[in-house]
Image (tube, rainbow, N blue to C red):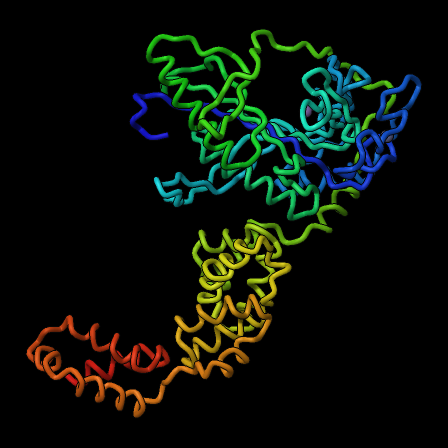
Length: 492
Ligand code: ZN
Ligand code: MN
């Protein structure tokens, strides 16, 4: 959103549901796995049969604590499970076990880095931003209603309760975001933090990280809030950002033309690039929360928390500042390398082995990432190991091959699994860095182009580029371009 918005500002709050990466459900021993035969991972507890009693999965508490700590939040010593009552076919008990007035973690602050983006999607200026985290609580997921992909879905809906009872951490922010990109950077921050510490797979496509954005707009000098719209079913962080952007615009236009902005839930329609009404939400739900009588208050000791803290790996923010200090990287490069822990590990191994941390960062962020993205791989299963990439980079730093040759070699290393050295030998690709040999080629080129030589000596400096090109061509790209340039200019 830009300043062209006539004094309007956006007010955005985020809710994230992240599935905790346990093997079993939060209150029973059924598998929490994804993609099994419908209703195969069920038992009396998660089917909500009368008399069945929930038993809290300690692993869910452990991972919930990891999630909270990874976000810099404090875990409350005592939290209370509560019943959130509502009726829906995917919720056979008629209530969801969640937490209400005594959540697992509350009143936190989280600092993220955020930047607005230009037209091409490039970050402009990274700045820290601190967001209020209202709560992080633990709850069970509901099942799933299936309306398509099965026989006669025009007549029937199906219910799959495999997901019922899988553990979730719900994270709710204050309405602190003022732009879609801030919300975008926030979700990415949370997603990475949860993956980093193994609290959640946080994969939006698989639905184990779901986010909702509450969006309204108001005049900058206005107190209080106008009607807000809840954006749901956002399948990717990018779609979420686009949906928020669209919504801000739509609401400003509506207010300016005197139309009412209704309190409602809207979806993102990627095909048409717009949000659409899913349902109106005129009245707030009354969930009639009350403490879950079948579960004790959840009490976590400070020893338990300290133990979880001690288990945490170096966190992304710490790693980013270390990369900037230790390797002299800029924030943008460091944070891109730390976008994923396997990529960060890959970088460290390669930077140390190549002895050139800056060009290693460049190589990874441009050439390697392109190859990885093209083949749908992560750094962890890159066919070119960190040590092999380092070897290639060292050949370039030593002037053995040119950067351009390096860029031809890497895709081949990727495809064949051969080392840089093998490919260089096979292709006779070694860069000519021998002054005498290059001088010889330069002289040949001069001899073949007497007219241009005359103009060059006469002061037409632009011809230097022409000669470099000719020499590179004559050497089949193997001459060291720096040396070529130097020699040509020395002839002037
Ligand atoms: Zn079960
Ligand atoms: Mn929830």
